[in-house]
Image 1 (tube, rainbow, N blue to C red):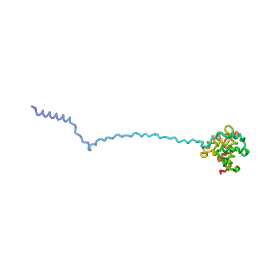
Image 2: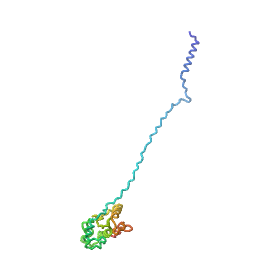
Image 3: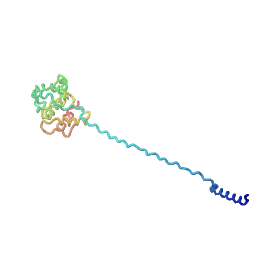
Image 4: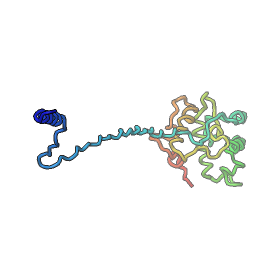
Length: 220
């Protein structure tokens, strides 16, 4: 039979053990409840935008200057015929006997691409001084008398005209200048053996309007 003292002692020990093992009571914080911790979302940085390097386009180069549609200087088909007619390339046209001039006229017509003498003359009237007649006379005196081909041989009207009344393309002046350099200076020589230059025809200082200003032939 247990004694009351032992039972009380045992109960006291059990109560002490339970008290030691129990969770401590929650202590309320001073000033009220604590807010739950806030978690900050990680900052997502965007990937850097890669921009393509600007495309550098080269400036368009200037189109090369051509020689236009002027008629190239070439070998004459009529020099030998003129030689057989006894033509003296040292004499101005006015000094050539009329009989020889009449024989030359068909060569002029063919060289310039005309159908008849009316390219320079009034029909049925060979005495009237037409503009083309004056030009033909100056062409003979300045070019046929004063110029030779690259080998120093005589030239004729078709050397430059090749069957065309108009042999120079004046619509493109830079091209015409290049043509003059390559063909009139580069392919022709002077009868007097001096250096071939623009001044032989165009004078000094240079005058581009050869027919009207240098030769004094009216435009009409």
